[in-house]
Length: 258
Length: 320
View 1 (spheres, chains in turn orange, purple):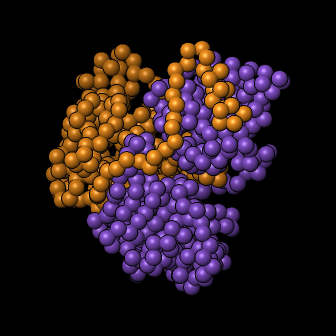
View 2 (cartoon, one colour):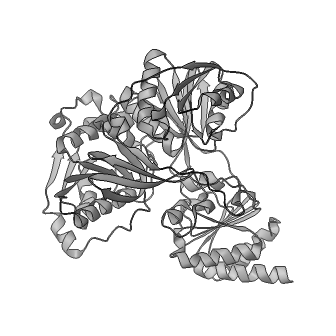
View 3 (tube, helix red, strand yellow):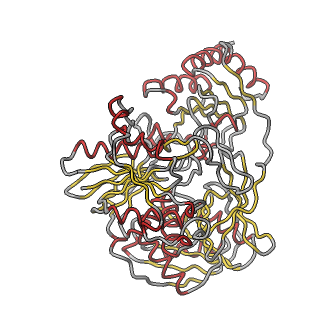
C-alpha cells in the first residue's frame, strides 16, 4: 500500500497580506504547516505498524522554494516528495487547488490519502472534501484516532455532538485532527538523509491540467477589498514579573468581576 | 437574489446556526428556500418556514440517516441541476463544511468560508471574512453561480418571522463512493452534570497546561471563584478532560461574566465558543498567542506560577 500525505508550506512567522494582490504574502521563509505534520506522523506510524505500507509520499502545490520546508517531512521518515509548482497555479482557490491536487494524487495512485486538520495561514479546513469528491473516494474528516480493520480504515472523530466512529474501505481520503498524535522530531540522521531522498517537481502540463483550470483563471472566488476589523474594547497585555496574579485581581476588582 | 439554505438537524431538531443563516438570508430580501436532507425529517420543514423559508426541498431517504457528507453532495447536485439558485448558504459545522467543499468540487463552484457577515452591495453578494487571526477583514465574492458560502458558527441569531413553508420533496441517485463510508457509532448529545453554559464564571484549560494532572490548577481556581471548569478541543481529544466541558466550535458556546483562559492559544475554533464573555483574562507563555488579540487582560507568563498564586489571592479575598 502507498500512502500520500497532502501538505502545504505556509509563511514562517508573522503573516501579512499583500495589499496589491490581496493574497497572503508568500515571499519570505516558508515552513511546513504545523497541522500537516500530524498527518505525516500518522502516515509514518501506519508504515511502521504494518508491513504492507511500502511508501509514504508527500504531495504539495506551491512555489518551488517550498521544497526546503517540505524536507522536514522527509527528515521525519517520509520517502519522497512530489511538488506541483507552476506560475499559472498561483492564487488557486478551493476549486482550482483541489483540481490540481487530485490530478497529482491520481498519478500517484496511493490507496490512502491523508490531510492535516487545517491550513495555519488561511484557516481553511475544507480541501480534503473537495479532493475526495474529485477522486470519487470515501472520506472521513477530523479523525482523532485512526485504526485499520480488515482492510478498512476506522476513524473516531469529534463533532458538535460528541464522538462518531466511522469506517471506510480503501482507497480512501482521511483528514486527521491535531490531537491524533505527537509528531516526532526528525533525528540528525533523518535530517542528513532527507536531501538525498527523491524530490520531484511537476508542472501543470505534466499533470494534464490546463493553465486556465488553475490559478486565478481556474478559481471562482475573489477578494474585493481588505479592511480593518470592527473596533474592540481595550486589551491589556503584561509580562509576568512575579506580580501578575495581583494585577489580575486588581483588574477584576476594577471590572467588578470578582 | 435567490438563496438556498442547507438545514442541518440533530435528534429531531433543526440546528440553531442553520436557522440563524436562514433568518439572515430572509433579511437580505429576495427569495429564500431551504433544503432538508435526512431520514424521517419531513416534519421539521415547518420550522424552517417560521424562520423565513418560503419553500423547503426535502429528500427523505434511509440512506441519508447518518450525518455523512458525501451522499448529501449527490442530493444537492441533483437539486441544483433541477432548479437554479444564486447562492447556497451553509452554517459551518463538521458536516456542512465537508458537504460545501464536496459540492464546490462537484459543480466547479466557488466556496468562501468562515464568513461573519453577508451583504448585497450594488446588486452583488459580498461576504465578510476575518483573516490572519481576525486582524484583517476581507470583502470576498464569487465569479460564478451558484455562490457557495460557509458562515462561521454562532454568527447569526435565528429570528422568527412567523411564515410558513411549502414543502417539495425530491429524490436523487446516490453514488456508490458516496455510500462507501459508514457510521459505526454515532455521537449523541450528552447530558451529565451541571452545564458550563449556565455558569457565571468559567475557568478553562488548554494544551499549555502540559499534562492532564495540571487540570487540578484550573479546578482549584474555578472552585475558589465558584465557577465551572471548561476545556479546549485539543485537550478533550487528547483525553485530558470530558467532552461535556468543551468550549468552542464543536463544543459548547458560553458567555459568562468572567472567562479565564489558562494555557489556551485561542484559535478561531475556540474563540467562537467564548467570545461573548463579558470579561476575558488569558494566561499563556507564548506572547504571539491569538488569544491576546481579544483578551481584556492578558498575562504572558508561566501559568504554573500565576494560576496557583491567583487561586491563593482569590481564597484570601473570599475569606476576608
